[in-house]
Length: 181
Image (cartoon, rainbow, N blue to C red):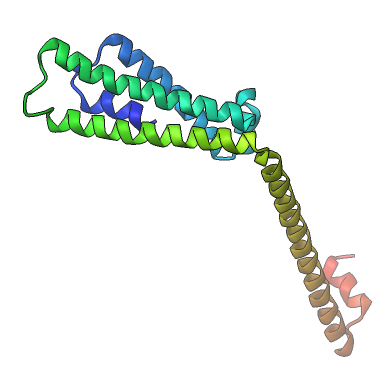
């Protein structure tokens, strides 16, 4: 996402063609869908593409985004050279910063994509999903246990109050007065 937004913001409008601009906007939307998917929000996961569920396909898409970013980086450099705006001493700081950030993020995207493909090929997705389900079951069990402990604590507090009232001579008739019966 960063590699798509940065050139739009940093580079001059003359340095990016209309096609590059629209490809970047498209990829921003595509990358945003990946970010929402990786955030693990249940509602958004139900709305995601079916290919996002398979690690091999997810890795392929990450690699594809990374390679598109590499191509766009080369396109910016080639366009500078072709238009004659490339400086002998090198690009200006804005172009250099954009080019460097694109290069770093594209290699990270390709690396993450390759990692997803390798893990998917080794069938580690099913193992991960099993571990995640076990974790969710344990969290649910812990929450039920905490809720039950609170209920028991509340019952104990009510019983202590009842015993105190009984010792002081207030019985069930006092409870009826309190509740307004």
